[in-house]
Length: 342
Image (cartoon, rainbow, N blue to C red; front, side, top):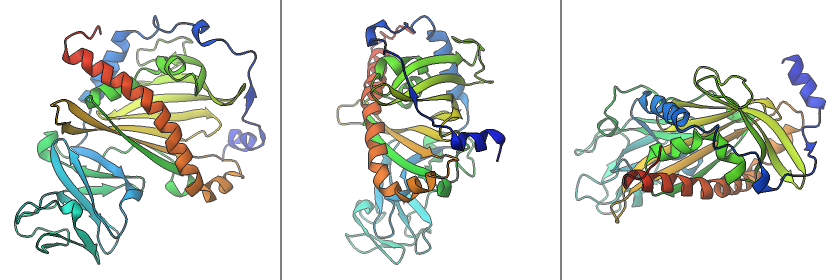
């Protein structure tokens, strides 16, 4: 443990702001949020390998007794846990007569089709072939090599994060009318935080960008956005932190808390293409995983209270994504009509 960690245990993380600045009197950020910087970061993110891995959803959603079904990049996928608790996945249509396997039942780790009883233990059978799957302890992933078209990786690109047993984790899921790049572009624009989310963020400054620029000159590293921001708790009470936004693969943006309360905590925003809806427009699932950690002794109480905290954490993420999905949907609408100004 570092000296900073030990000192941090005794410090009160809360701050009392001075008189709040009215929303419309904040310093405008549009000159700093240069379209070229955002577009460059997005282009680099989209060029990174994913190994054809896609997020299916929260690990916790996959219980021992029932499967889940998802459509990923236009592919119907079913997933369940075998008798040892391992994640299994494969095509979501029964090879016999096409029944939806998501409606089947899991008995002793075997998925049984509810139309004619075809039993799947996770291995090939009757023309059904399994898909590579991975459970990282927070999220469940599936590999779709035909959809991704890249050289496959053995494991998904999971960013550095706190150990699950040392953190309080929660997963939010939402769907928007857009494509994954619109979600990623939203997250690679940290300048919008205090304007679009004044109920959550104040005093936001981008101190470093991938090009080395930014409001305060600090460093975003080789390819990140460094941000100083305060999270609002109540009234004038805030928690100031420093954070770094990076994109480790084309459909993921991660916010790492680098200084302040919760240092080491992460917020991972994953964008999964679902395919077109009935209206022909694309749908993208947003899966946001929050792993909150702290070196404070009292954090053990928070871990014990995790089942009570998770709904609150999901509600907080949902409020933010209500606005951010509207942002992403608007971006897709402008792009698809040729009116996007970037």
